[in-house]
Length: 424
Image (tube, rainbow, N blue to C red; front, side, top):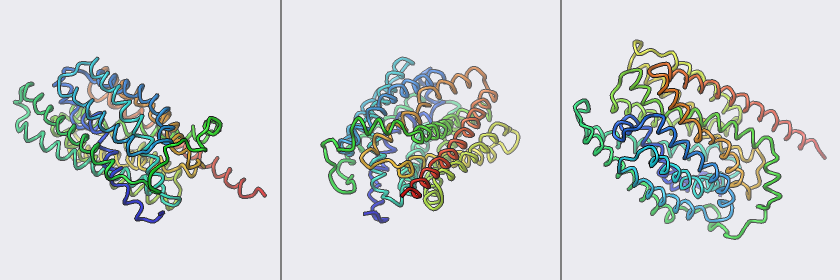
């Protein structure tokens, strides 16, 4: 089942794969200015909550990989969705810094431990030997399309609930936000019900006993591969860029003077770039070279963030920011769509895919620990344009690191393949 028909089995994974991140990430990306005002917290408070998410997610990545190699992915993912929906009930109130940090710590466990490595393993299986980047590109493209549709609906509903935001009281703002959160919780809970009924992995039911390839020795050998750790650095650099999209809305408000609704509309528009960027990156990467494709996208990310650094409100105040934000986000979405398509390039045995995904994710998603706090501090401590310039400059720097890491890994692995082909 390596043909294109197999890829159609990805659709329940796609829906669940975005639904689980709606509460912890999509809502703040769309409505962060509103959340800050309604809950009476700062950017730094939100950054600390994201750091708590990242700290707990680190342990979840380490433990979740072996779990995905042992148990049925659909049940692991179902439990994760249900637990995340329950955690979202806290957001219906007015969480302070402490409660928000505790909630995000729980999200770090529910979204990662049982879900993330299982989702990556299923996608790898459905992609077969020849369509890895296409499968992961479809996964992220589908997730992006789902996020774009949901975000557009939520922003439209929000604008209908608050037709004149400039004359809206804090109580009305909090009520509108509460309705948005309720809708999101319902979506996550619905995904938890539908997923185990629809997800069928290639080859039928997964074995529940421990595969013979998953041993302490095999994991130790996996940990000794420099290419695996280097690719973790690539994912880390790409993920920093991806997380910087969270600040586009607050950037539009702070620097360009946009309203909360206009800022949410800008962020929703960037979501629509994700499906096109991810599927295009997957198709091109499978046709050419995975690592060189990622290197090219890192260069585009550098160019985009440099443009955001020096873009002035006086020069095309609406069109200029929209075009640069959408195209820069597209480059980062393209990276996100293909950076997990390299397991075969890294020569990872099929029985260790989940564990390898956990190791790469452990390194690659470290920004969950520090990035929100760091950018929140920069934006709060250097108000206005300067703080955002520091953030965009940081993304340029880490993108250059990712560029060179991709080229290094490509060169190292090419030499290894050539040596193996020449050996008797």
